[in-house]
Length: 381
Picture 1 (tube, rainbow, N blue to C red):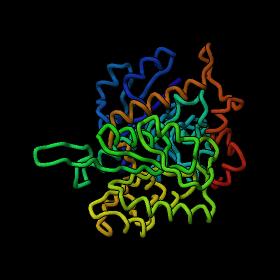
Picture 2: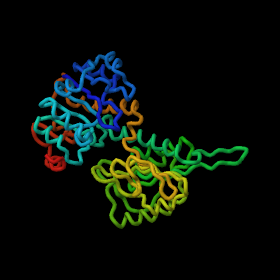
Picture 3: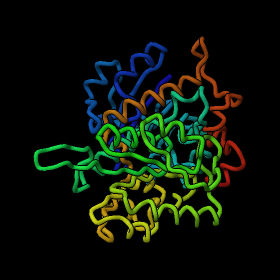
Picture 4: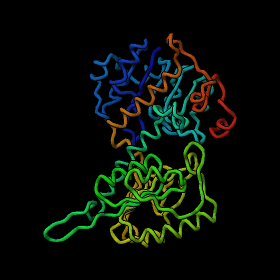
């Protein structure tokens, strides 16, 4: 089949959906690969690397209008107005695989439906063992957790590790991670490697063992479990939120860096860091809000900006993984290539098997209709 990879158009997007290293396997499987000119340049993959791997470099219109399968980092709601322009020239009956922010309506989904485009949102890949190698959210979250700590360390006016010198002993920084998911665990590991004293809190008691395996202390506030589906946390009750705030404020006064990563799929980020909590922190402390994409965990966060409030630096970067474009693209490419393999049998025949739980979980539009009633209402189709 003819597989096309367009250059990403979003202002903050530097990743590419397919890297040269994964092209040979697709060609061996009988596919023809088309890459838009300079699609991988921002991630360190020049056009000649794709040509050397066996791909054909061409223009955007050719890719979108002729490819039977399009692989992208962003489409649908995740790509805003760009996806509308692309949808207008996309091939009828095409298969589109990308991150699509499938939690809000967007006009592009209506066009996918009308053109009988089968669209698949990678954010909806279920967190099951068989799908681990396709889980783009985990891949990108791990990079965000790593880079978030490095940027926090750069903005903290003190060192992370303990240092014994002739001028005296420098005590290590104290780093506290809110949310021990993939991003949180990577943040803990990175902060620990930098020599800080690390601790973490999560409303899911089940992650305690994972936190402690990284050499961090698991802080227990006795709120009761808030374990949700797919390994995510569910929203706390009002009583739990109040108790959590009281405990967090008391704990924050001795912390140098807070890395917040708490997220609920399809919902605004829970507000875990109150202004009172910020005031309790020492001047010069840093808050790295990795949940800024959905509004942030700190009430004072301004998504996409770094501010100083009450003497505390509050960082709320967007699309942090894309700042490690080369590595992020390699991981994304592996994830999406593995997902693509679900559509082909041993004889290399293509089919969309709606009985496959991974495919069924990710599909948004297919055969001129919404894949399921719930998603169709959410997407406005």
